[in-house]
Structures are given as C-alpha cells and as structure tokens.
Image (tube, rainbow, N blue to C red):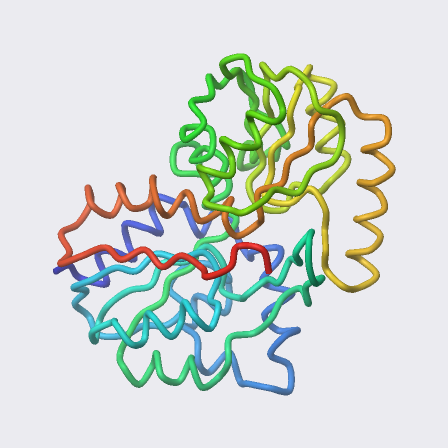
Length: 304
C-alpha cells in the first residue's frame, strides 16, 4: 500500500509534468470531444484541466493496486472499475481513446471521449486515474520509444525528432543483421499483433529508426532515411482516421513510400505504446512503491 499523494508527487517529479505546460494535443482535443456532452472541468482535477497531464481523477488516499493501460477503451475502463478497490490507481498514456484505424479493416474515428457513465463510476468507486502523454514520450529512460529499443536489443547510436526544450522522441540504432520479413515476424511477437502495416522496400536491415505512436510523418521518415536507416518502425505508418486530415496524411505517406529505400513498418499505435507499461513503467512502479499487485490491462484489439 502507498499514499496517492506520494505516488503523484513522484510521477510529477520523474516526468517533470509542469515543465511541459499544456499538453499540445489533449489541451485541444479534450475540450473538443466533450463540448456539449459533459462538464469535464467539473469531473477532472483542477491541475489536470490546466496541464492535461497528471492526476486526472482523485480517489481515496491509499493505493493498494496499480493498473496500467494505454487508451481508456470501454474494456480497459470496465476492467479497472470491476477489479479496482477504493483508492486504486489507473496509469495511462492517453486520457482519451484514439481510434487510429485498421490497415486491414475499418478506418478510425480519431479521438473519442470516455463515456460519462464510466467516469462517474470511477468517481463513485473512489478510484484514481493519472495520465502522462508527451512527458512519457520524451523521457530518456522511461520513454515509449525507449521501451521498443530495449525490447528489440537495439544499440542506440543517435536520436531524432528533436525538441529544443525536451529532447528527442525518436531513436536510431543498430540491430543484428536481418531482413524485412524476419524483422516483421520479430515485431509481431514483441507486440502480440496479428499483422503489421507495411510500405516501402523489403531489404537487408542493420540500422533502424523507432518512433512510438504516431510516426506517420514523412518529414520524420526523410530525416531517418537521411541518417542511413534501413527500417523505420512506428506505431503508425499510415494515418487511417476517417477525416480530411487522415486522408491527407495517408496520401503523403503513399507518395513518399514510392521512392523510399527503407522498410516502413507499423505495429499499431496502441501496441507500440503499451510496451512501455508492460516493461519500463511496471518495473518503475515495482521499484518505487509496494503494492498488493500491478495489473496490466491490454486491449482486446490493438488495431482499432
């Protein structure tokens, strides 16, 4: 058992939550998706409504169990509510569900709100939720891309997608010589996915670039290719969101893929960011505090 106050203070310090200011994505999307549907500012903690990272919902003061997940899907929320005891904490990367789309199925709707009924059940059951988006992506040792690099045994040689204040999201490094087909099989195993999204060329692979989550930006792909990368690995190669933005981004990658020499491999946005919870964040919670259990909540479907 641990104090919620101590856990929040330690998380805030570790990820330097305040130094990031307002989260650039969720400071826009949370007001948008809840507009006219729910008074989100009344439901969420005051500091969260300013920064859009950190303690989102505050329950009882003592935490017996911690739950780890990426997106607040209905399945994830139901599991947390049904299994959680008063005071238990759910740590997530995202405060909203993001339907990114399935490269072999339906396109997604983009950001989707948590149902008010689920939020009310969390509050009624005196449970807590903490989310950490951009600060987790940038963290040097606990980052989303860092977790992928470690799982793949990548010898890190460089970093890219640079921000002057916070550092780099992407990782570049060397791997034991392989080829595209073997790499795809390895990634399917690491992320427990039935298939990958693929564009570009099949080739020998010795140098990779890694960007967890939304890596479907051709500027980032070009930056990696200019650094001699053989395979670009990300949560998303294509944006499969069913709107003008998603279709524009999709066409940009199609055009880029026609002339790239790299293998472009997507492992799903959700799965690419779940890995850090399964590995680095689980170990962090185990090391920092004593709980009855740490419960991972994987999604039923990684491509959605």
